[in-house]
Length: 566
Image (cartoon, one colour):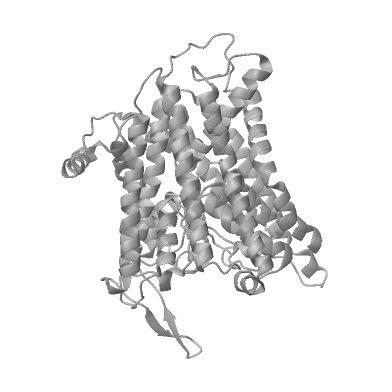
């Protein structure tokens, strides 16, 4: 067990050490400063020329959003068309058939919004063609879209007075060519060296030591796994995701993948400080997120390594911890670390089954996604935190009798209304969806039997988790839930759309409105936002608005389950 703890400590240390310089590099990319990837400039200019893009154009916030949303609409049509027709397309050596309309709708929306909620098993529900030209392609595009929106937020926050937020196309292209693609190549090579397959051949039939025949799926796994982790996309090439022995063969590959999940989200917080030239502010934001993350890891690791008390009472050894739904080569501690890492971001990949987590670990996974601003998805994590900063500034200003100001801009009624709507939208989508599903399951025993593998408290948690994961653009699940049905495909698809685009629209709008305001120089009366006091205030606002909204639902689900097994 001591080795497991040291493994966790090493991964977290590597994360922090790598994220800081990466944050400085990303700031240079978005500021257009000279960096070692400038040799790609002719290639990028070629893309602009072929696509008739004016790279010098400066967009206001409305134009920026229009381009972002139009591009996403195009990729929706692209994804739907290919998934339905994939059975007739090339690179299909295993003869997999096309997806149904509702499943293709859910899959396309899910990967388009950086969620990767999978209501299918990867090796059976996809062909190599759609894995590459829908799944992997969208994993680059959607991650770059979130980071491009983050770059626009940085531009608006750093400008004293401006009506423009930069060029969406330039941010998008540079994010792919200079950040995501190079990192994906590095991680992909490391995974191949660790034993992850990278092939376009079909399934292989082998003879085991017992003399039986076994069919082994393979494919371009390493390439897809690299960007699924780095882009906080999640999803799995195989149905078992990163619990699969080919997608994640060893403890070494497990470390590489787990570090990749949180690397860019952490780096973007440091990027904030470099870009704004406010390192102290970035340290405050990072500290709040990091302390919460470490707290969830500490509790979850303790719960998973402690085992199930009911099994211990039967005299069965719990020395390895709670190992139901976990891989022996990975262990209970590393599975707990992954579960917390994948839910403080919008990644959603798993190296064990979350449905088998002990109740408090399952609750923390839920709570991480319900709060949805501890590092979060690439780009959008800080943008969600930014909404709570605006609310905290406004409340703090009223409490101490000062005009609410943030980075030299007055916070007024319009920005506050948008921020409050966004803060309440997340619990509204989750709780309403769960309430409807619970009503249908309660009043229709056939549906309850089809959907839920567990009754009572855990059954509620399964439905709550599905809508929470959808609204947080996460994609993981309590996979005891039978979710490949028209109801779950359509209902979660609708939640995915609202929870991705409405926040981005609102957040860009807030930044755009504030950027146009007259800059007010900081003075003795200015509320300081880079202090421990304000950091605590922001955490309190997040906890009161986000966390407490879900407390009744958590009480009826994982908390009740925890008390029951005790």
